[in-house]
Length: 408
Image 1 (tube, rainbow, N blue to C red):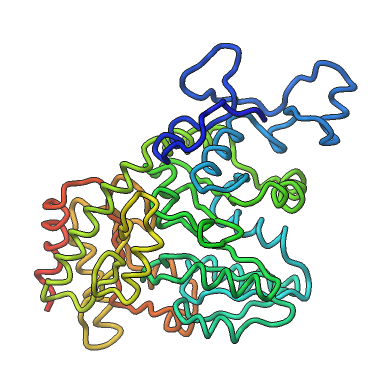
Image 2: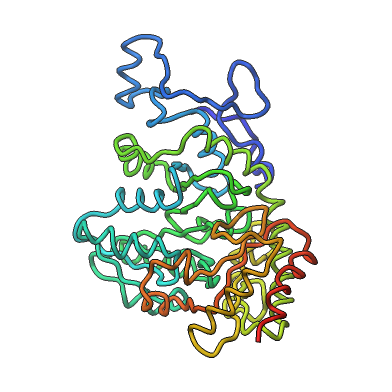
């Protein structure tokens, strides 16, 4: 579809506000919300050509919708890719990636530190269709290299990881994939394009849960894959036309509006996260803090190089920390006590909200994994994840101290 005639070289903050499809004949300043399931055609011949994908034009919202197109165009502009395709959720985006790219007999190499549902999708659901996955260390490039087979078609990573914020070397993994005739997908949920653009480092597919920072206020479910136009047309659009894991126009409109403030939100939330991480690192009841913005983080320098889309390296807005405990039961008990004491933070597993959220990954977001899988990912019973919002730093510090200061 035609897009606005914007000049070249615009800053990300400008694209986040302006990139969208051409305005309607009414000249609306805010992008229109097209709540319609179908579109009336001027005549039967035009309808036939459009349904056959021989001519541009909207026919049915499962195939395309102007509001959804605006959201896709804006996200692609921010990620620096040719195109994007929106889905009903972040996990449906990963499912679509697998359905479009993989077949029986193919092999995937995936970080063992990714989101729990991603692990279950690759280790469980995809195996039903003869697709095998090898899980490897997020940070050890040699481990990735050793896992590649002649039938490897995809390398999959998220960086930073959920919840331990491990950083992978995107360029190194892209080189490994391409030298092996495979492709690299990077889940960019934690950073968003405001902080990190994996395409710059060679990634072929960028995965998003728009539910998180793209929306930014915890209102809707959404997902997307950003990639080359040919991949959308040849791999993904034929599947969504049939299977229907598409984004609703209303949810697309909400995410479209959310992206307008993406840059300033990510910068502000990252600043608060760094301040909170530094305070936690000095707290006597905290064993260890995981946050890429800290100099103590093992991949700090790599994170600062990769997470610099805003002009300076920042650590994003999610951090995790371990509390002390004598055994697994004691760790879990102390983690629960610290979480239950909060009065400002929200006890929920979502992230990317303007409201700070706190959770216990071992029993929630990664609770469906086996104990062996959790151990491989480094997720213990004493781990607490905090996704920092826009509250004042002093209020967040006071809130977390309510529980931490009472721990043995």
